[in-house]
Length: 325
Ligand SMILES: NC(=O)c1ccc[n+]([C@@H]2O[C@H](COP(=O)([O-])OP(=O)(O)OC[C@H]3O[C@@H](n4cnc5c(N)ncnc54)[C@H](OP(=O)(O)O)[C@@H]3O)[C@@H](O)[C@H]2O)c1
Image 1 (cartoon, rainbow, N blue to C red):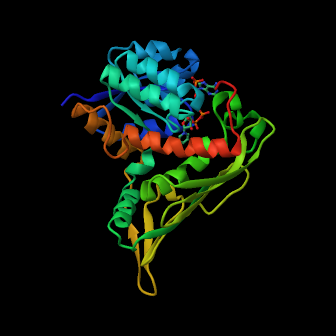
Image 2 (cartoon, protein in one colour):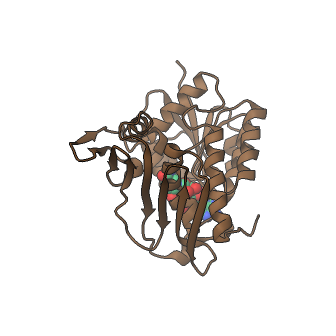
C-alpha cells in the first residue's frame, strides 16, 4: 500500500518529538518540512533525512507529494494555516489547541467538509493506550459512577517575558497550552459540564500564567489546574462510587495506572506506548485517510468543538481576550 506522505509545518520542539515517532511507522514517510526560515528548514531536513524543505509554509502546501500536513506553530496561526492547507487539498493534523476559539474551530471544520479532507486536532492523549484503557474502564463502571476527577498540568518556564506561551498576540496562556489538557480529561469521562467556575493569575503580558477551574456535573465535580509557575505531581485521579483510578505522572502520556477498589484490592496496570506516543494518533490519521474519512470517531470534530466550548467558558470567566479577536 502507498505510504502516506507527511509535510511538517513549524520545526519546533514538539515537531522534533513528532518526527521521531513518525519515522518509526511503516505506513508513513516524512516527505517535506517548512519553516519561516529556509536555513532552519534545511537544518531540520538534514537532521531527519527529509527530501523536500521549504523556507515558507505556503510552498509546502503546494507540494504535490504531501498528503497530510502536521501544523505545530503557535495557536493564533492554526486556523489560517490549517484552512490554507486544506484549501490546497491536504489533510491536516493540527496541534493543540486546534484553534484559539470556537469560531475559528468551526471555520477549520467547514474547510475540512468543503474540501473533503481529513482534519483532526492533534490531541494525542486520546490515543495513548493507557488512557484509552482508563476511559473504557470508567465507561464500563469498573469503579462505579464517576463523582470526582482531579488533574493538573503545570511546568515552570524560565523566561516568561520571552516565551510565546505568554504572548497574547500568539494565542498564549496557561489555559490554551496547559490547563486545557486536564479539562479534556474531565470532558472525555464526564462530558460537557453544567457549570464552570474559574480563576486565573496573569503575567504582565496579559496572558494567564496560572489557571484553575471547577467543572460541575449533575453527579460529580472535576477540579483542574494548569500553569507555568510551579512544578506539580502531574497525576490524574478519577474517583468513582466503587473505587478509583490513579494515573501515574505524567498522566496525559502515562504508560501506567492503578485501579483501587473501595476498601479492597489495588491493581497496577502497565500499557506501553510505541515511541513517545505520537505514533498512536498518527496511526489513527492514516487509518482514517485510507478509509476516506474526514474525521476520527475517537477524537472527532464534535469532540474538538465541545472541548473548545468549555475552554471558551473558562476564558470568559477569567476575562481572557486576545487582541486579534
Ligand atoms: N501535543 C502536545 O503535547 C504539545 C506539546 C507541546 C506543544 N504543543 C503545541 O504545538 C505547537 C508548537 O509548540 P512547540 O512547543 O513546538 O513550540 P516551539 O518550539 O516554540 O515551536 C513553534 C514553531 O512555530 C513556528 N512559528 C511560527 N510563527 C511563530 C511565531 N510567531 N513565534 C514563534 N514560533 C513561530 C516556528 O517555526 P519556524 O520559525 O521555523 O517556522 C517554531 O519552530 C503549539 O501550538 C503548542 O500548543 C503541543
